[in-house]
Length: 326
Image (cartoon, rainbow, N blue to C red; front, side, top):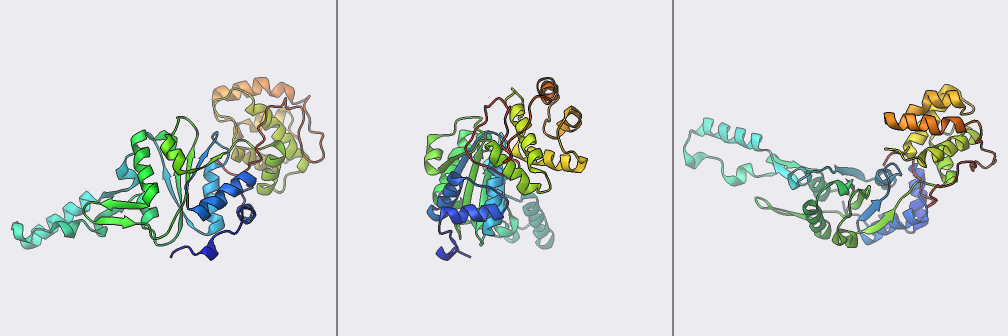
């Protein structure tokens, strides 16, 4: 069913509130872009480091709007057949063989092209499923920077018209307008044409205060001071040159782990035992244990509102926060 104006958000503030109810804490910029995406009908390109909540934004928009989430996970070598549609050649062949068994090998009784190139033999892939869906959806095109420019050009054409032409069947137009979120880890420069087509949002790691708020939203049992201590340590870890810095989701997992361990502080022993919750590479484990472990006895959280000190600075404060992996 089409989306009526009454179903669209009235303000960025209402979008921010809806996202919060969906367990996503959006800053003003994120709420504004999410609002504009729905009112202007434009795709959103979300860039930023891995683990800051780019993918989760699309999931939260799906939850907050009641739309189905259709996800296309991009990878190197992804082609149109895997993204748009392809024919079920095996089923078509079986149909041809069945017809031949019934009617013989006479060419006059062979299945006509129109009989085997129908919806019954069509395999819908994510892009087509989003276009052909009779109900409004959120289309997530995840990690677009992993594809090549040829795929990007095809995608640009699709996002311009929201229609697909199948030579054997004709043109299929979108019945409703999807909310489109494209994410990129900024591993390669995307084309200017794609960027012009999209609204743009940069997400980075949240401030210490915002990350504490996120953690306590998803792990409400954790003490404010312990959450502050956790974020302080995670900030120190992210300052190191790691293969994979801890994501926000891993901060949440660590908080839940500390609760289950019954920890009321993060001393050297607790840190060593639970370090693998936030660090997932062996070389990173060694580096973090060597560089951060000895500092735990000297760096403490003293602010009553959960702000951390002694982390050496270096955090990025764009106010954006989320609760799950990118």
